[in-house]
Image (tube, rainbow, N blue to C red; front, top):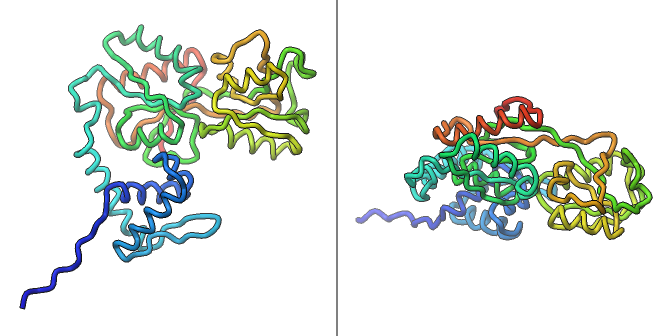
Length: 312
């Protein structure tokens, strides 16, 4: 008798990438942000994968997502295979014969503020190297670097540096943005507690600013404040100019929002955030990318005051 063949599996690379990402992020929302899809779409795709292979990969609660023992074993085997498949199927910048072209992903707020001066300095020092900037939300920047589509990334220090090596470029504080005629407009510094009951203008983004700001507001007991969330630092500054509230932005955003009608005033106690240059860990950079990395690190050290290399 002919041996009965086992049923064939229908599993997509997209599902496997979601599985690896969810295992790393431990959050349906954050995994969806990396792929530009909704939390429910991630959940549905993972459920379909589990049904297809007849295995439960995650334990789900209302607060967290955790790998099962089966999921951990599968992740150890699947993650390197997914990386190898992507490397084979997706053209990389370094495989296109453009040895002098470096793809750098940057968090949107940093692209508009600190990155232009760094790129101008790089072009002067490395005239034969072209840096192509991929301007994205921070979660997408991290995904681009992890997947190899971007060799370098400039980000605000993320919660997790899984698979990445990083070098601290500089630390940056948070500022209140007020109109020139605002009651706090003449202050040299503003205490967080002075914002109680004040309408606040915040960034609706995933650069790390929002979580840091909300944490500081909670720490200092700033309650009763109406929060408006806007997509661009310039929008925050313009609405503050119009007297519609007090904006809270990273100090580096001042370069993109400079105006005689708005003041950036340091918030105290200081809540610094770290700006980092990231790359894939355990993967050697091409010569041109390594030169850009070294130049950015040297530039920040001489101009902005840098920290140290970090290995996750």
